[in-house]
Image (tube, rainbow, N blue to C red; front, side, top):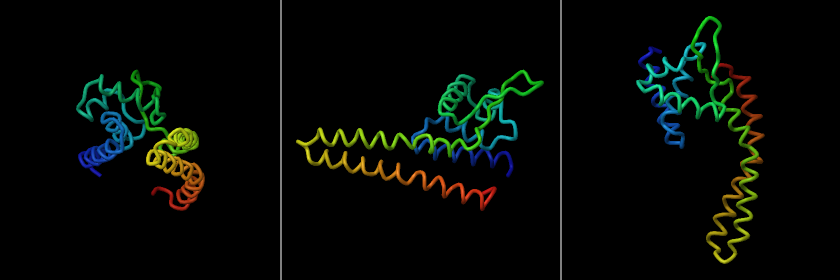
Amino acid sequence: MTEHRAIEAAERGAAVMVAAGMPRMPARVMMALIAAPEGGYTAGELCERLGVSAAAVSGAVRYLQQLHFIQRRTVPGERRERYVLLEDAFYRSVVDNDPVYTRAAAILDDMAAELDDDPAAQQRAADIAGFMRFLARRMPQLIDEWAVERASHPGH
């Protein structure tokens, strides 16, 4: 893929991440790092590639580091640090959020119990709590299925 087409693909990927709720600049930086060469990019290279300011990259990098999607690395012989996408970042984000579904279900159950004077609101809270419990139950199975799929189709 030519560099121009890779940049366009990364921008389309960033648009999808933005539509899913990620802030625009972190989404752009993350997609640029997915398409990065071995060793990632320096902050300056990200600025140049994305056509944005150092402040924009700095904020995006900080956000992505907090989510454990990217890592700052030093390269021997280089003065500038490089940013790389962490191995299995997406996988880990799903795995790490598994307990959140159980906690959210418990909170929503408590809400439903408190909403006994409003049956419609009580039902909404109960339905979402049920969905969260479903995710908590299914997530380990999906993760196991992914491990099998990934092992049987390396590189896909």
